[in-house]
Length: 102
Image (cartoon, rainbow, N blue to C red; front, side):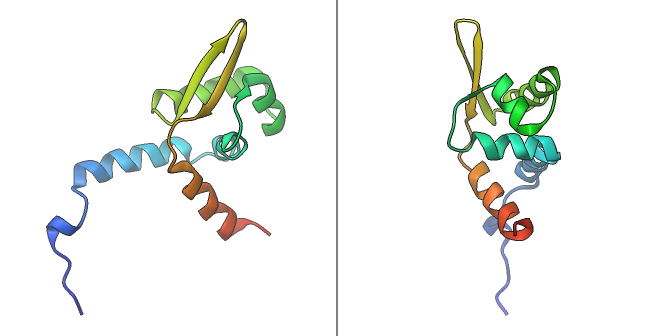
């Protein structure tokens, strides 16, 4: 058995940051939002419709993920578009699909 060295693993401070990000996305609506945004730039209304929530609820969830740096927000006139900022989210959704998909 090979011993793991301390410098081979992430520092606990980095794991704390990771845990905070994972807590942010650990919500069914937020996971669905990430899923629909993986390959698309979408408005709050479009995201709300696909996630079956009211636009104000969608905005709240999207704001939390944007504040964490997971999503970007871009205004185009009166419309607000969201997109994925963190490419690692694709791996997380692929893991969820693999484990819980049909």
